[in-house]
Length: 117
Image (cartoon, rainbow, N blue to C red; front, side, top):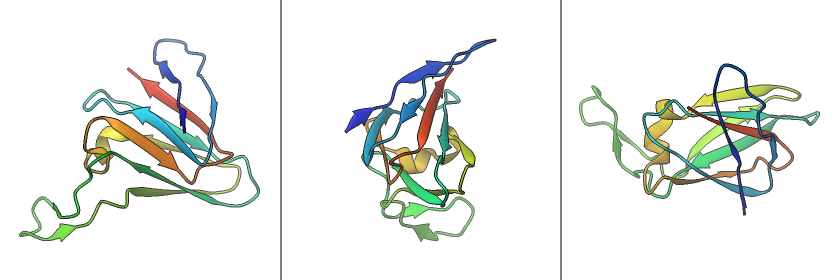
């Protein structure tokens, strides 16, 4: 498992581009505005899954009267051929729950950039 190299954002940045393998690791820091870019260099769509160490199997949806969903499989992100998807990690914090250690799987051959504040 490779560890993704993060890039700190500033007025001008040169991003560290990571070529994803079958499974890669990164550290999620809650409430910091981290962004993960997934770029698909292939001619077909690919689906990556991001996941923390302890996403809930019974996550209560706020305002849904006790309705729960299972987040334990992680967040699936489909990236079309020759396209990029930018993921604001704080918006998906429930999927990244746990120790901060997270994985990206299914992204082999994608280019990945992790932007930190």
